[in-house]
Length: 569
Ligand code: C2E
Ligand code: CA
Ligand code: CA
Image 1: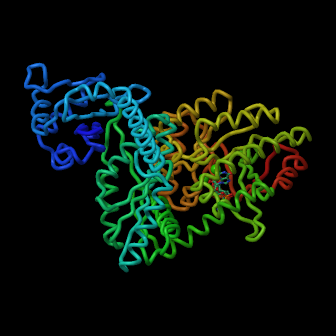
Image 2: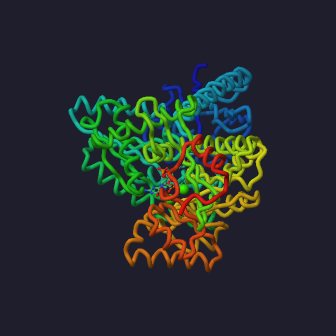
């Protein structure tokens, strides 16, 4: 169409009009694509506002026309103009299809239908382009935080590594994992958990430099890649990030939160030359930071790497052990002041195919840190229930069995798991007792009361284990529904000294005042026994009476030796 110029206009993200495409022959094109001229800009905004197909027949300085439109039309010799608004299927405004003519309106009017079809085609094209753009962005993003997702992160990470290699430079990796985040989710629910993740992600984004690469790798784990940064630089940034993360914040203006994180760093090229090994080493350092008490940073080092590899190996082997029946339970008797068997504690052992017989200290901490303890713990509960059932079926007069529960095994599911196996083996709650530690109560302060009350409502007994070693406060004894207290064996060792004895008597007398029975573990000598009985200990456990026994030997003790009867002294 001679003398006609078409142009697509749409609103940009900053709501400045953008010219998508225009006919270069039109002088306006230059004005549009160069720096914004105030009059042109106003004109486009006006064109974008026009909501229905509109033909401006003859442009005269007329009150009816917009001043801005008129100025531009006059400037570029536009005689008439057709504006066709472009919309998405859902009627969202996409922009305007505008045709300017250097002649009167009749040529535009004649070709109206054809021009509408052109506008429609343009509409489809823009819509498709927009959708593709959005899909691409979504595919690169983590929906919760807007950070890069794993896949895109690895793509860019490889590019940055190539660059570091080429420049013979450094690059550091910071791996950040929030501390006790499971606790936030368990106590406040996932919606609040997600909000906390968003706040932390925002802080990481805000404290990043333009060249940094950030991503959420999943759950509460973030990674920051610092190009051109050596170990010292990485440590500095790590400190800043940890400081920023632990600043308190309010959610829904009701709750004040404060989260901390553990952070591991690794640096190219000394800690690894590819993405995978750098991340594994940063991960190992991060776990090491957690094991040292959390809320701190650690850099990758060879020893850390080795212990990490060992951990990974044990963690894999635990799966096989559960499958191949390599775990077994030993039972250690608990006796009363007269030496009569009253209850026992189930203690796990691992008959490892290569490393032989393993005590819990060789694998429980790893199982706890990798989360494997949940399955191992469930196996213990089930095995105890199965064993008690067997003893009952064979009239072997069992006594109640205490089961150790790890912090990471503790949660809403625990009461359900306990009930499930008691039901499965047709046992009443009087056969099981759980041992929890003060550390567990401390870590699960918000959920503990709820979970323990649920467990108690089903008639199971709860003993507070390792009493005196942790955050130890008698406040816990009042706050939580515990039935008994178990004084840790370290205090019994100290009974040789008079100050040690004073501490134990003070603990015993305090518990008596609270009406709580006290179990004392680690009793090894007759002198300790006499002292403890004299001070009012209710139950005693230790090598003096019996070591932990395998199921077969323990079964002989409860049957052949006649069940509940004096074992000693
Ligand atoms: P714990 O709950 O404090 O268990 C008591 C530990 O003291 C047991 O060690 C027991 O063998 C040991 N012991 C008992 N009497 C004496 C004594 O007179 N002298 C000395 N020196 N030690 C004594 P064990 O069996 O090595 O278990 C160590 C820890 O492993 C346990 O400490 C417990 O925290 C954990 N554990 C054991 N079995 C399980 C389990 O099934 N699940 C979980 N989550 N943890 C377990
Ligand atoms: Ca115990
Ligand atoms: Ca203990």
